[in-house]
Length: 226
Ligand code: CDP
Ligand code: CDP
Image (cartoon, rainbow, N blue to C red; front, top):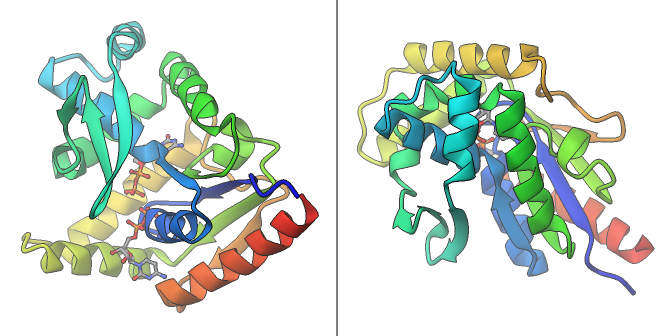
């Protein structure tokens, strides 16, 4: 029996993708790949190197010369750019608010998708992002599209900020999430979109455990078939 299926989890910002993807990967002893962290890493490097986020060629050159590594850590995945741990830095607001302007470029996405496909080549992977089921692993054995109302998503991020001791403005967060979803959905290259064969899970009133259980049931079905 081939248990090495590939699970693609897509959806808008703060729908719970990375939280549930990480748990599902742990349960199955699969690797977890957070593709958003890769776009965030390039965005951080572009800001630090003062590269204009509208300059596609310059961003592509910068990415070409950049190593991005995702490694499992005790408290979740660690992200290294050129050997330096940027796990916390890439979650900062100035990165979040610029990332959609970096990820919209074709040359950037081509390079990222190649790297992501290399991570997925041996299977046994849970990958989350925006275009995993549509472009990165279009033949994934299981595709999930996670949804939640924008109000619920803003509250989740707000609570997360407060629990980390950060200041947080709920109305501002909601505006930023809406803006990022709009840019990600309306971009020309590989926009945020449900794959035709993806299963929608609306998590608005579901707990993390509820969502994990639903995905685990579907994954176990697919593993039996594989
Ligand atoms: O965790 P959150 O939902 O806030 O975002 P993320 O998954 O870290 O993704 C950050 C940004 O990277 C998204 O808003 C997209 O612009 C971009 N992204 C993408 O274009 N394609 C992906 N497969 C993953 C992320
Ligand atoms: O990766 P993505 O941006 O889609 O979302 P996330 O970072 O996994 O989740 C955003 C926040 O929502 C986290 O603090 C989760 O603990 C929380 N969450 C939740 O409250 N209920 C769920 N069903 C899923 C996530």
